[in-house]
Image 1 (tube, rainbow, N blue to C red):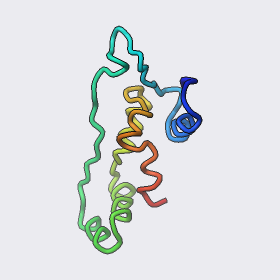
Image 2: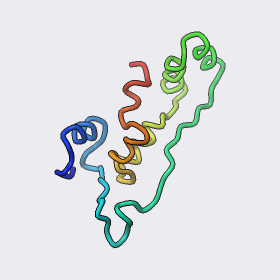
Image 3: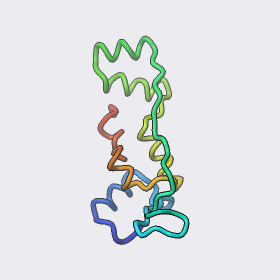
Image 4: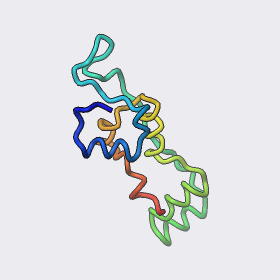
Length: 111
């Protein structure tokens, strides 16, 4: 990981990503990009709820229902989708963190 990052940025990336596979944006750019950006990509999650999901949502709330969807229905969170793109070198984790926190699942899923 680049040495010009703050300690907080370094800790964040190292705590949720595979640092050996992460590429960070070069703000100076290169002959192939404009200031380190070559395009955009979609980060999403699709929920296909069942009756139990809705029951949990009504009775216990969003976090309980989301955790059920993730664990029991095999749902992929937008955070997991994002981390996959970060760890494949497609997305800069620090740029992504401003839009969708890279540690989001740590506080939106029950442990």
